[in-house]
Image (cartoon, rainbow, N blue to C red):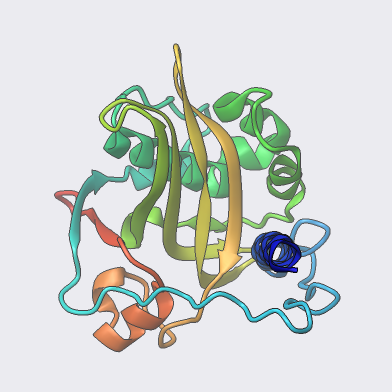
Length: 248
């Protein structure tokens, strides 16, 4: 009986882990649907069904960093939002270089005239055929209006993980949280994803927006958020503000 009880416990543990992973994936996809809409932003929609399976408690969310805002070393060139040509691939083979590349790609894909004119080609320019198909469709089919942009440089970032050498990783998982304007509506949102190192530089492998709790209306820079707002909006550990360019 003891052996059968142990086997049953192990099986139940595996089931709970699988269910929790499914909940996490559902929340990410649901957040993307609410931001862009099921047809790419023409209208918002809530995901169907229950987010948490009955009887399975959701894992506790980590607490955000309290205290002074951490200042990161990574700068973002927000001018990429105005490019009518392809954005340059990031070629600095470090975790910071990966963050800078990912933030630039996100800003370019959302706001640039080049990406708005041919979003499918834009996805190919920064990712080739390696971008997750669902993510590529979300970006390429979103409804766009003049003025839509992802103001990455006014927000913050964190590295969630990497593959390979810590100093020269093969892949890096990143989140950038900043004001996102889609279809004329601005809300603070997380855009997360993965970049992969290639001989040409960093290539996009996945990219997905997720909604977050909003700070007070009118806040447009992470440095304007109160500590309470920052803890609520930037949930979790490891967030840093992007480095300020000289003109800011």
